[in-house]
Amino acid sequence: MSMLKNLKYMLNKSITKRGAIMKRRDFIKIGAAGAAASTLAAPAVAQGIRQWNMVTAWPKNLPGPGVAAQMLADRITTLSGGRITVKLHAAGELVPGRGVFDAVSEGTAELYHAVPAYWGSKSKGILLFGSQPFGLRADEQFGWLYHGGGQALYDEIYARFNLKPFLCGNSGPQWQGWFRDEIHSLDDLKGLKFRTTGLASEMCSKIGMAVQAMGPRDMFQALQTGALDAGEFIGPWTDSAIGFYQVAKNYYWPGVGEPSSAEECAINATAYAELPDDLKQAVSFACESLYNPVWTEYTTKHAKALAQMVANEGVQVRNLPADVIAAMGAAAAEVMAELAEDEDELVRRITASFTEYRDSVGSYMSYADNGQMNARAKVLGY
Image (cartoon, rainbow, N blue to C red; front, side, top):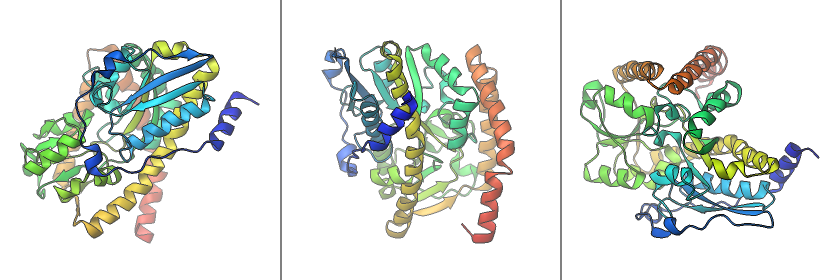
């Protein structure tokens, strides 16, 4: 049996153990990172068994990314035949959520689960592999990496940090966010305190918004106290579990800042290089095979969560005003133009590859998926 067939056979037999959805009070209480990170033992390699530690940017079993991280840990363990056992550590258990990149780069842990949108301070080129304002959809993002040359560039920029990256999921179209007050025009956004990440933060800054970066716990509290006027995190499934609807009722779309948001697994490059070829394939296939299941689970559960919030929680779904969308589009174009002229030659190459793929596939999508969806909406109303 070929390696790929064997992996698929093992995958079909595996049973993913899903963690129960945690209530908001269970996962917003994330403390500072413990001292355990400094005493983390090196992976045991006894009788060919490697014990890997996965650190994540998420509270444990957070609906959406927290669940997806556990799925990946379980899948790597299963597809490796138990020769790699992966133990998941939620944000704050070994290192803070935003500390996972450095922890894996330095060898404190073997792999992490997060999103590229968090690593702009490392290189702006990294941000393109996660999401882009007015950018790629989830299927297009996967297509760029696997069929448009994106993976080689993804590998090249992460190699600077001793990391081997893989995409392993996508949350689909994100919403523009939760707003305490209704937005009527672009003027209402001037100076508005707004939480977002990645290239979307640069787009929002260019139109006069006061962008702030913070985790979901802090975002909830800031909206509650008025320290924040609005913010976006992921989408209805995850957002409803956190309880953002309790502190802001206006839920705006479309989320032009992040038409999709890829989730990633990055592995310490030294640890990855030490794997035999069959285990490298097992790890790669574990990540690749989760992309669509994670994406489609988000889609299914986003829909259910949104309907529930509208019906039972008083949430008002609102369209961004036309002048806001136009201004954001112009700002997004400026962001991409700046990346195309970045002083880092690799960032310029990544931007050129992304732009070429976006333009080529976008032209086709205007006839294919967009045409189909427009026809369906016009004739059937959904």
